[in-house]
Amino acid sequence: MKSDLSPHTAPPLFESTLDMPSNDKRQNISSTSNRRTCFVTIGATASFAGLIRAVLTADFLRSLEKHKYTELIVQFGAGGEKLFADCQNRAREEIEAVDSTTINSIKVEGFPVDTQGLDQYMSRAKGAKDAGAVEGCVISHAGTGTILSAMRLAIPVIVVPNEELLDNHQVELAEVLAKQGYVVHGQVSNIRTALDRLDELREGVNKWPPVNSGEHRKSNTIKQVLDEEMGYLD
Image (cartoon, rainbow, N blue to C red; front, side, top):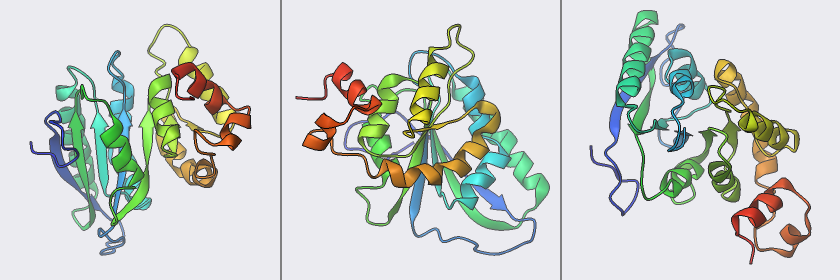
């Protein structure tokens, strides 16, 4: 399907709109004039079915609606098309089973892998290039490169370690970054709670010093260490 995310040729987006019902039948509870994007990424090297399932449930979509998100973009990995479609269909059935009264619509898009990288999706979540957008968030597996990209753009990020992997380095990284106040450490089982905690992180994220500033060079932080390891400092 056609995407307007970037001038480069992006992978096809699997797109749908899920109408969110209301138990108390309130109408137009939130404005759709301000786009707010939640970008979910599992990386390109390992599958993470648990995270895909967690963000494509009726309960999580209701949480997004509560926080005034209008758009969910999911990078579901190579071979994840069927899982993505199945989870969307199940969420739609759960939503329709509760109530047919629509209060808002969340646009859901997905793609497997973008060989050009994730910067365009990160920027969309940041909302920096769109006057009508509100800052959103990134939900990521605990990959160092992805986390660093979100941190450098000062986007609030929920890090969800892939506990399906054999080693626990992702858990350790998430715990350290969360302890330092840079990310919210989420789990597949508590992703909704992690979203609720994200606003507490947002103010601190926006106070990070610029990468090339003297303040950044003087600060002894994990972000600085990651920058140096990845070669971002001059």
